[in-house]
Amino acid sequence: MLVVAVGVRAPALGDDPPWIARGHYGMVASDSAEASAIGARVLEEGGNAFDAAVATSLALTVARPQSTGIGGGGFLVAWLADEKRAIALDFRESAPMAATAERYARLAEFAGDGPSPSVYGGAAVGVPGLVAGLGHVHDRYGSREWVDLVSPAVDLAMRGVLVDEHLHEAIEDALKEADKWPSLRKDYAGLFGRFAPDGVVPSLGARIRRDDLARALRIIAIRGGGAMREGPLADAILRAIDKSGGIMMSADLRDYVVKEREPVRISYHGCEIITMPPPSSGGVCAAITLRALEAVGDFKGDPQREMLARVEAMKHGFADRSRWLGDTDFAKAPVAFLLNQDYGARVSDALKQSRTMKPEAYGTTEIKGSVGGAAKDDGGTSHFCIIDRAGNVVSMTETINGGFGSFVVAEPYGIILNNELDDFLTVRGAPNMFGLRQSEANLIAPGKRPLSSMTPTIVLRDGRPILALGGSGGPRIISSTLHVLLNVINDGASLEDALRRIRPHHQWAPDVVYFDEHPPTAMADAFSAFGHELSDERRKGVVQAIQIMPNGELIGGSDPRKGGRPVGVER
Image (cartoon, rainbow, N blue to C red; front, side, top):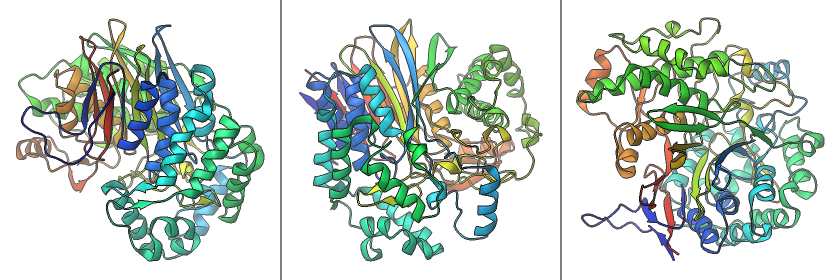
């Protein structure tokens, strides 16, 4: 039996809210109730967590077109229960072999004050890795027939994507961008024609049929994980990119490789944190923050001081991200040094200051140029967690980067292509769309993978998983994931409470604190007194999590900030 929390009723006293679910034999937590139900059905029918991950991911391609899809990529961290072993898979998008810093500097100069070529159009598109990644997951770790895992997404596409509040808002945001630059509506008519015909946002509760995407998924069902490397889908992608000013070639798609990497692993308060290494920055940033907080001690009885310390530690993590991190296959980074407890202790000394410091005090004076731009809100990216009855755990984050990616659609299949190349340093001295400063370590280069904030994470205690989590929301993935983890591990909060709590965010540049909701007066006063500038803009990250209780009960939580629903398995 599947236990799914759906509907909009207010819970009765003592009930779990609709975004919390319980189960004993499996759990899926994603930002789409329909995708969670599809993944949980795979578990109920005997599939393992990796089978369910394939089905859930492809369902999210349909259900969250603004956030993720087969035109994007991602990362996976997993725990193999039988082997008591963790793995980290990198199927992040990569730069085409013709991509150079000089080329993108010229493109930016030519664009002037118009739409950025690293955000919109074919030049923004990285080589997609999601389908190859799912094929790798299935071939190495899955147990069910591939076609059976793809079919539910085909059915969902034929039924249509549900227009909920998040999708409605994402379409509105895309139309606002088109109002700013009218050429977007003409150049990317395939996107606007599908999701905002005649410039009108579909009403809440409507369904947008995706017969085109269903055709693409049927091809994937037949051709497997290599479906995007060669064949009709690859041809369609190359045509769309070429038509919109891109530089991707057939060899870029054909030669794409999924990489297995060593996870980042650190101890924290009697737990082991397992998360993603570069080219994700999330794991290293999280580790720096946790090491520093553990060294400085707890703040029981002074919640405002604890929150200030969290933000200060995050500032150090983001500053080190900007200075050091990139694709370590191309540029060496002192990852071992940054993960060292001694370095965490050094950072913790800075947390004992009576006021926050100026940006240059965080150790990044070598980075020249801009001090960071506005931290754009992010409609892109999706995270899900899965646990099966055998104890296998999957924590997976996937993305097309910004809301609706590059706006480029590969016809006639309706594949929305990513704008992942904006995550590189494409123009020296300029921040990316999320206001993040970049160093030469993340400078665009042929075949390189851009730095990411995705932070898929699993927490062990005494060698057993107790928590899986991750998020969406650009750089707020890191801070949001950390806040929820700290709420559970440090404070012993229930998953419901841990997800509800406020989440201040500071990414070092710009030098401002963002909140996901209006902060309580005492918190705002404490941050102001500490010397922080507080933004009036509300910026949110969205976390999906599963907690494994000592009695074996599974509690799934889907952040109410995006409207997801977890689904538990009870047989």
